[in-house]
Every structure is written in C-alpha cells, then in structure tokens.
Image 1 (cartoon, rainbow, N blue to C red):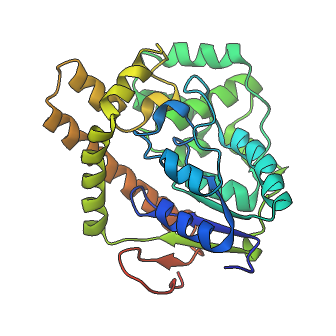
Image 2 (cartoon, rainbow, N blue to C red; image 1 turned 180 degrees about the vertical axis):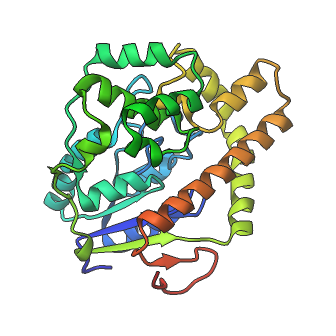
Image 3 (cartoon, helix red, strand yellow; image 1 turned 180 degrees about the horizontal axis):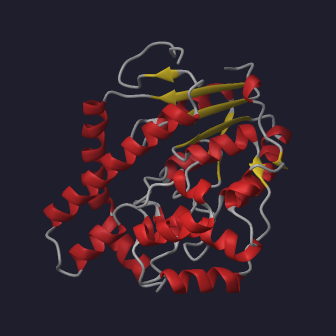
Length: 302
C-alpha cells in the first residue's frame, strides 16, 4: 500500500470501512476522502454514521458533511470536489484514501463519468411535480416507453434513478442510455496504480454490527437529528430526506411507531441496503480484491 497512488476501500454499510481508513491514514500519512453519498450532508452526522469530530480531527478528512441537505448532490459534483481534494492531498504529500459504500462514486473515480448537460432547475421542478403523486412502478413504466434501455437496468422501486432518467430525457430530448454511450470525463485515479479492496463480511457478522450501530445512533441523538432535518421543510424527494432512519425516527417522534418498532424498521432497511450494496460490488467491481473484515488476513482475489 505505501507505493500506491491511492487507497480505495469499498464495502457495505457497517463493515468497518472507516476504522480501516483511519488506521491506514495513521500508518501512511493519509488523507481520508469520503465516497459515501449520504455522508456529504452536514445535517446527517449520526444518521449517516459519519466519523466523529475527534476522528475527523485525528487525521485529515475531506468531503464529509460539506454540503447542505438542501443540495441535490450528485456523482458529477462529487468528482468536481474530489479534483480539488486530490490536488490538496498531493501538494501536502498525503496518500489519498477513498472510503465509502457508494459504488458509483468508485466507478466514476476509476473509470470516468459520462458528461450530461446540467438539468435546468425548472425542468427538474416540473418532473418532480408531475411525479409527486405517482408510484415508482408507474414512473418506471413511463420511463420504459421513453428510454427502455435505461429502464431495463433499474429496479421499478428505484425512484431516485428513475426520476434522474426522466429529467435527463425531459431536458435533453435524448435517453440517458444514449448519453451514457458517449465520451465523458476521464478517470481521476488510475485503478492499476491504486490499492483497491472491497470489504466482504459474513452476513451474520454484518447484521450484528448493523443492529449495534442502530442502537448506538439513538443514544447519539438520531431522533433529534431527524427532527431537525424535518424542520428544514425539504421535499421528500431530496436525497438527504431518504437517508435510512429519517422516516422511521420521525414516525416515532410523531407517535406512529414505538421506539422498538422504529429501531426494528431501521435495522431491516439497513440490512436490505447492505445486501443491495454487496450485489452492486459483486457485479460492477468484480475485479477488486475482497477481504473479510471479521478476521485478519490478506485480501483474496475475486
């Protein structure tokens, strides 16, 4: 790892990525760079399991909590922010250590990103307004008539990505799949010169950590954090409002769920999310070495 241009640590939620990044940063004079789409939001420290204040002060951390929940953050915006952070890391001779669970960020980092024109705010607002009372499967069916190739690769329940494809079509008149076949921004990190790893823990071990972390979140103020987020009056379609725990803890705060029921729902949804992450890593990052974080040992080849 000391000879690598960068260290990339991916893995499902609660798999111990942040602890590993901290240890490597101390050993290799590293700068920890966030690659998780929820940990960018300032209002979601507890609910996104962001590193604590003491951890962020112990070694350099970047792109954690640096945007408002009112921002519709994107992988393109992340790459722009990463460009500046990489320049800083190299100027200070820090090893950049990317860590997170958003596979698309790692894919864009190492493979580049398709250049899609910015979506005008009025077009985005119109698409959101038209979709507000429409169920995700119905939106998926609508997308299938406009962009069957993109629709075929999306789950009918994946509302956020369906809306993204619809707004691209509405703004440009071209399917998202057509844009994705074109040339785009080059990769920022050479995968061949980076040390890459996907943490791949046993299911039972991961589920225990998910449960323990959810319980700890309540103690750390997750309910108050969800309440403060709701007080901002943001649209339910904003990415930050979809963070796991926001809806469940708000329902508890409103008396719709007991605390035990809210916690059970958070743990269930987190387990499902971890499963989707693992599936994504398996299919989209198949050539990355795997390592079981529940035991010591070298990475294994995929």
